[in-house]
Length: 160
View 1 (tube, rainbow, N blue to C red):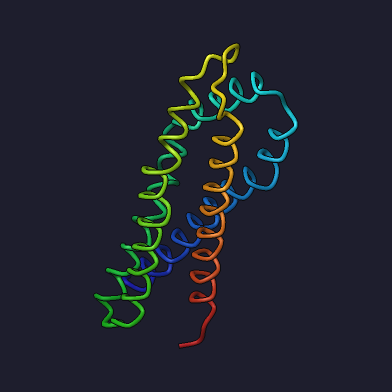
View 2: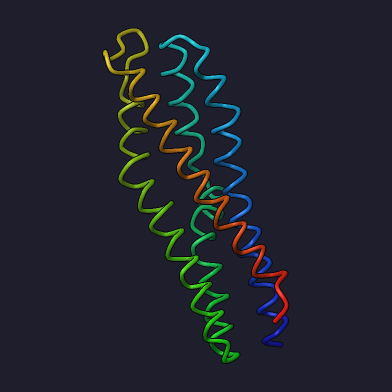
């Protein structure tokens, strides 16, 4: 039973990392480029709508699940006396927590709230700089998640 749970936990961990990598990448490599083509009022309106509409249960389950699932994997590996592998999965979770959750809280969310406060008819002078800063921060999250996904996937296909 533990082996079954461990395999399921690894699968869910990889899936969560992959889903978040895909979410951030889609935004970085598609949406952000499209948003560079619009005027400030359109940017302010659409970006605020994106920020508001991403706040739902499905997103939160994936966003935070990508931190919890590898911790569960780590715990199951620890129970199986696979301490080295348990440590690696715990580190992946920690990297996600620091590189995505904490980073989002201190970088992206303040930019989101600032953007949401804009009146599209009267944009602040720094609106393009804020847009570019947000895009860079999201690109960082994209590469962190792609890295975590790649490492988790490679761990699952390694022979022991």
